[in-house]
Structures are given as C-alpha cells and as structure tokens.
Length: 556
Image (cartoon, rainbow, N blue to C red):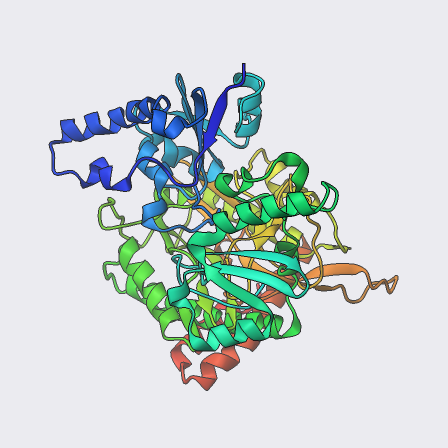
C-alpha cells in the first residue's frame, strides 16, 4: 500500500502559537509544549491537508526556510517551535510513534537540554549514527513519498542575499522571480540589459506548471528536461514527474566558489581590516581583565561587534558572535543572551570567541581561544597545543588540485587521534565573497566529494571540547593558491595562503608537543601578522594596539 510522507517548506503550525509567547503559568507552558506533537499528528488526518492522499505517515522538517538557507528569519524557526531545539543544524522526522531530531556533534549537549518531552536526539556523526534518509528507508513502507546576477539583499540576518527563484531556459532567456517592491529602476534596467525578465516571487509555481505542461506537449521526454538543484524545496520539486527532471547540485553553486581576482583582492583587504579590529579587541580585553574590571560574555561580544562596525565597508556581522567562557566554550556554537546565566571573564578564565563580518569587499570568520591565568593547567596547555598542531598540519599541506577533502580531515585530526581525542564538527568550510560565511561546497570533511581548487576560500578550524570544563578552537580563513617552491616544478599543486592575521597566544603552547616545522610555521605566521596588520594599525594611529601586536608576535 502506498503511503505518504510530507516534507514541509511552509509549516502548517504557526509560530504565533509558540508557548514561549503565552502569558500562562509554567505548568501550562509545559503542557502546551507537550501538546505540540499531538496537534501536529492530528493534522496527519486533516482532510484539507491530505487532499487526494489517503493519509500521512511522516512529517519531515529541515532547519531551513523554503530556499534551504542556513541563516533564517525568526518566522522560519519551525524546528525550534516544534521541538525546542535552537541550534543551526537539524533534521526533524515526526511519525505517529516517533519524534526524532538529528543534529551534529556541535549541538549534542545543547539538544539534550533543549528538546521538549517526547523527543529523541539522533546523532549525525559517530559509530552509532544513522542518517535521516536511511532511517526513513528502514522504518517506512515501500511506496512512501517523501550568485547568478551579482546582486545582494538583506532578507536574511547576517547573509546579504534576497529571496528569489531563477529559471534559465537558454543563454539569452532567464527569468527572475523576486519581490517586485525591492526592484529599483536601476536594478530593473541592469537586469533587462542582461536579458533577464522579472516576475513576482509568488508566481513561480504557476509559471513552472504552465511551462511544464506546454513543453510536455511540444517536445518528447528527451527534449523536455529541467535541471533541479538538490536543495530545491518539496513544493517545486513535486511539480515534475521524475522522467522530466535532472536532479544535481547547481553548477552555479560550484562556479561561485572560485573567486575571481577582484573578489580575492577584496577578501584579502577585508581580512586585514577585520584582523585589526580583533587585535584592538584583544588589547582591550587584556587590559580590562588585568585592571580587575567586570566583563561578561555579552559585554565582550558587543565590544567585538563595535570594533568591527567602525571599519570601512562594514555591512553587518556574518553570523551571531560566539562569546563563551570556561564550560560554555565546550558548546561549539554557544550563544549568550540576556536570559542565559551569562558568565564573567575572570583572571583565570578560558575565553573562546568566534566571529566574523560582512564587508562590501569580503566575508570573514575567525576563532581564537585565550586564557588569562598566569599558570594555566598542564592539561589545558597540552590540549591547546594539540589543537594548534592540528591546525598547522593542515595549513602546511601541499596537494594536487581537486584533492578529496577527506585527506585534510585525516591530516588535521591525526594529532588529536594519536592521543585518543577528536572533535565532532568538520575541519573547515568554504567562505563566500560578501555572501554566505558557510559556502558549501567546498567543505573540509570526511564525506565531502568536492575537491579544492585554486581560488577557493576555506576555513581551517580544529577544536577540542571538554564538557563542563572548557573548549578550544583555532580558526583562520585561507585562500587556495598555486603551490610554490616545489622540487618538481609542477603547476597543478595547491597550498593554503593565510588570510586571517590574529596572533595566537604563545604562553599556552607546550613546546615538546611540536616539531620544528610547527614552530617555524608559527613564527612565520606571526611575522605576517605584524607586517601586514602592524602597518595598518600605524596608518590609523593605533600605537598602543601596534605595541600590543609587536609583543604578541615576538618569535616563539
């Protein structure tokens, strides 16, 4: 018997029903949370929703919006509304018997504390993990259904993009579906000059339906095909029978990962300014703590953001700043707010900050872990050094073009693996040019297939997280460039060229855990930091910050 699974791009549950927004007693709020699953399951039998289907067996909900964006508006926080989980990566499957939420290792601890009653945490990584698609295959019956225009917008927090659909029929026939109220006369002229016809965003489904029916009658199956991106939402994907579409990653998403010279120059320049802002912050926070001033996680985050906002070409943050003290740093994507039990940074604290900016000429992402103790524990210093060694081992690698990212995953983790440690997130990710800070592909991970190419920009960000104690992560952005000084003279080999210039705290390093090549890399890196950003600081009259940087970059 054929059964049906619904993957939702527009939830039937309204966020306005969120129990957190109700003025009721705590007991009533808990009851509301527990009733959400039953309300959802009742909709499985709703005739208006069923339409021609006999019944619904499962409800599949990714933590995205209708365009599968990573950063989403509050109105699209459907996973958080139904489950309580607020992390940035999740898949939900609700059946008549099960309510399952998948997330990755960054969020296991957080999910355990946030999920409402009745939910089961499923792990995306680890020896006992099972992917959502595999779970569906094993648990549902057979037959169950389950940078093109160089424009920017501001529809999504932290990401300078706008909601739209694009359909390319042929070289000189392109359609853009967008909120017409956002199209200025200048943009309209620009698009028309590039043979782009503009339609209202709401008309994309009716347009595709009409196009599909007309083309089916005019052409045979071989002639009438539409290329659908793998990230297409359910509503549009279900318009076409399987024989009429080709499902694959969009070629545009791959092409935009290779930056041109203008984009690369912008990325280099924006990272210099961005690094200067973080050096200014490091100088400030070290002074505040040494003077005994009270600085909590929120104040520190606001100070980071403030220094960025003063920079030329600044547009916005590229994601919400992660500002985490001690055990909070063990949550890789911890977010502090006024309702949290925010922690103060003390003179013995470990402090991790992960932040980035959107600039008209580039996008940045950097993480540093610092410790204010004059006598940090041996264990912390050992783990800090292993994470640093992991970072350096990857950054030093020279490799043939289009090498599998799985290679970098193994190289980076090896120092930690050799001592019985690991971390539950990818080694790194692509970074867009004034676009998504997480630009996928490329991705430095064990399962990624998209090989690195010259012109990619990626992060390297190994870490170590000890629950209820501390977290460590060291993250830089790198440009992929042609490898230099090869004995063979080969031109198809690549290497990592650093873009981020923020010093690494040297008194946390255990020298015995490093080889000479690691020390050489660290000294060369600090020479670049001082040379590149020091010049910028002097030009801006920041003499105190310049002196701080000079001390931080002395040879190890």
